Length: 291
Ligand SMILES: Nc1ncnc2c1ncn2[C@@H]1O[C@H](COP(=O)(O)OP(=O)(O)OP(=O)(O)O)[C@@H](O)[C@H]1O
Image (tube, rainbow, N blue to C red; front, side):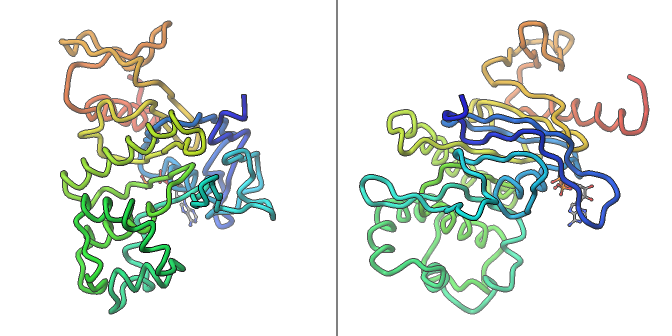
């Protein structure tokens, strides 16, 4: 039922104006609330393009896109929703890697000045920062007095995450933004996001979902609910975490789902070996090599 879907995409195709070929082909994808979804695929498979369309950053009128039941490209789309307690949440929030390189943030200003310049009034800061922002600042170890132009990429990334997560969200699109976080910050961020998604199970106003695009699978076990595999702009694979079965011997692996939808992978602390096999298979297909 579409009312239960955070993301509902039908027949979505996209071609960059300067390209001859389409980057995305007839994508159909439904993502329910209260789920964490991994989006994976080779370089150039279309992940960023897809996330930017979902996030309303790249205009695409070819196909149907609904975010929380609304078209992000329609005139009446408002990204902010007011909840019954008067607080605000964002409908859709896209985090990309290019933020840390933008001129806007690489200035001699403090983190606090940067946040206020984006429209957070002081009273908002005091109200929301004490509850949610303080917690985020603690887990990501950010100091409001840091001067933006003097920070490392990983520190700027932490500021980006705090700013983007100050308000809760309905749909969070993360485009490989943990690449420069250290393992502890990454772990704590994942815990925070898992908690956010779990909250929606008890409070319908806070129901939300996450789509996380990454090439790094370490530390993700049991964090996600579903894996979506994009290949050359098409959905090549789609399976649920609950359908993964760990086997002790690599010989018992089946990288394709069997008739019951079960994927068997050798016991490991990482999805990395499985994804590597998939992407190697993609590469073989691309090069016309039969397996
Ligand atoms: N601004 C652009 N103009 C033209 N073509 C583009 C543009 N951005 C991406 N493309 C093309 O679209 C395809 C998909 O790119 P996209 O960035 O979505 O892939 P990706 O899966 O996110 O890759 P990566 O893992 O390297 O980040 C690529 O073939 C790329 O060349």
